[in-house]
Amino acid sequence: GDVCIVLSSPFFFYSCPPANHTSPVQKMQNDEGLLVELYVPRKCSATNRLIHAKDHASVQINVGRVDENGRYIKGENDTFVLCGFIRKRGQSDASLNRLAREKGLLKRV
Image (cartoon, rainbow, N blue to C red):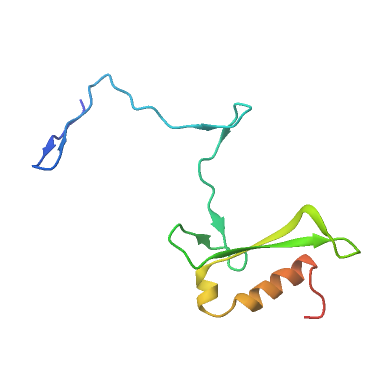
């Protein structure tokens, strides 16, 4: 069978749940009833590194698309995410220029 360890101290007490107890599994569903992920981590656009929750130096930059008159096209933008590692090394500007050039946003840079 299962082994249960009882922990106690002056500050807390923990004992095992009853044998017939099943803990509910948290599942996230959208309005259509489809299962969706609870957390999708961001990745650095320059290095493909995962950006962890404690990376407070990371930034997300949205560059809006414009029409031939220079007006913003609603809802059309390109998103670039830079991690704190790139920013700390002073490579943000070069990385952003490279990414924008690859997307066709910059020419002759």
